[in-house]
Length: 114
Image 1 (cartoon, rainbow, N blue to C red):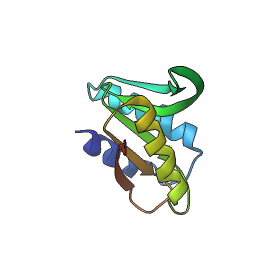
Image 2 (cartoon, rainbow, N blue to C red; image 1 turned 90 degrees about the vertical axis):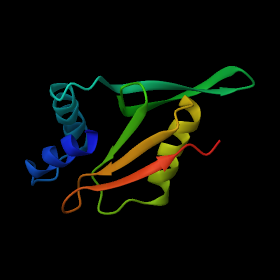
Image 3 (spheres, one colour; image 1 turned 45 degrees about the horizontal axis):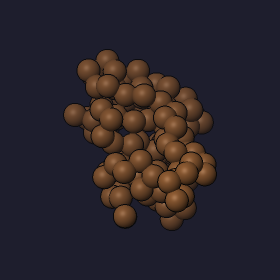
């Protein structure tokens, strides 16, 4: 269902916007489709059981999946590493790296590495 919503959403947007515009609009589309989601979710990073920093995931869907949104010419290893770090810190198993700047919709499924 999530991929259907994202694909339909992308068809309506030909121009390339900043990531925040896609984030705000995609949250609306996901909620209209009946999915629970939150944007800019803080994820704490721990070291020796103490918080040493935090990340902000673009969208958390159903408290199970992180969507990391990009609007870049091409996805790089650093984009993948960013999502994997979010997954490791959050203890969630899967996330989607979504690039809106490519023709169509570029989606990469990432898995937690720890």
